[in-house]
Amino acid sequence: MRQNTATRRTRYLQLGMPAAVIGALAGTMVAAPADAAPAPSVVERQRASALRPVPAQVAPASYVVQPGDTVSAIAAGFGLRTVDVLTWNGLTWRSVIYPGQTLTLLAPAAVVVAPVAVAPTATLHTVVAGDTVYGIAQKYGTTVDAVLNANGLTRASIIYPGQTLAVAGSAPVATAPAAAPVAVVTPAAVTVHTVVAGDTVFGIARKYGTTTQAIFALNGLDSSSVIYPGQTIAVQGAPAPAPAAAPTATATALTAEQAANAALIIRIGRELGVSDRAVAIALATGMVESGLRNLDGGDRDSLGIFQQRPSTGWGSPAQIMDADRSTRVFYGGAGDPNGQTTRGLLDIPGWESMAFTDAAQAVQISAYPDKYGQWEAQAYTWLALYG
Image 1 (tube, rainbow, N blue to C red):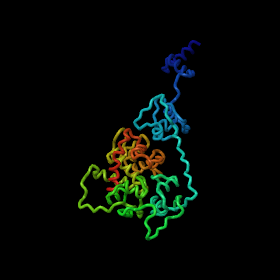
Image 2: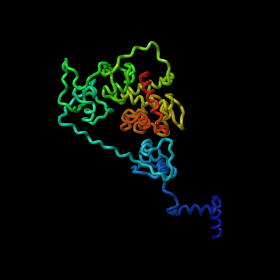
Image 3: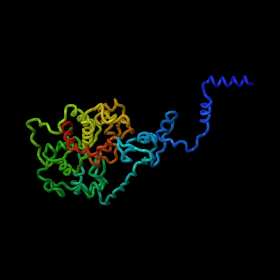
Image 4: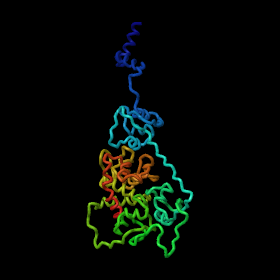
């Protein structure tokens, strides 16, 4: 018996495991007290999901930050986009979160606008190519605001051929050859300009020696309206004489590289059918973020014209450095190469009615949101020059 006991002890010694270690290992088999470890954070749950597939949890209304959490990890853990979590909580890409902080994980409730009742005496007008709200109001002897209010529209709304509009008037105003205009007296200096491919409101205003605001007011348009070839626009002024020489360089002059990138942003905007205002916002954003250059570096891992970051879902470094692709991702919308991973300008609800700088900031979520509006005037100049 003693010999067998000694043999067994020898075997334990040959394993190189002292009795104290064996005892410690055995101790790990015993359940730890309930308060021995904190609850796992979203980040820890994500790490565990690498070993076994775990479906994204339903997002609660709020979440308390745990040690080791990041905004991107919290968003991914609940099947949300990082940019949305940042926006809902007033954060930027540079913001730092801390344990115990409460984050909102639900979008603010949408404001429901009650439909505008149409007066019983209203008649219906079917929009045809070339129609403007101003022209329709003049035809029916009413005002632009009356037409907008009767149809639940704003000055940022766009009308299109085939659309039916309610007009507060019994019938179109007759156009007797010898009679003067009934409701609106057109100044003698007003001329009609027919839009051609490449025209912009800014360019037309400069051609006739007037302002964009004057054209907007005269035609019932605003800065988000889209003009198209064949459309007629009333302009108060006469075409300016052609310059004898090329204009001198100004503060808005661009280098060859900047001009090429500006032309690319404008071309893609035209392909996507966005308004001049959307193109101007993209141009101003590109100037603020990179000086309209396709940079291969920037803050942290930011790249390209719009300084998009691979780490926050804007694409791989090679994709972001593709200026054509990164521009389409900035515009967003149905043709966004990133799908629903990121949020472009066209994905921002009500961006058309936002201030210029606010619309750009809604996409970029920058720590310096006021810079975009400083380039608004120059952006429209580049649109006219390189469009």
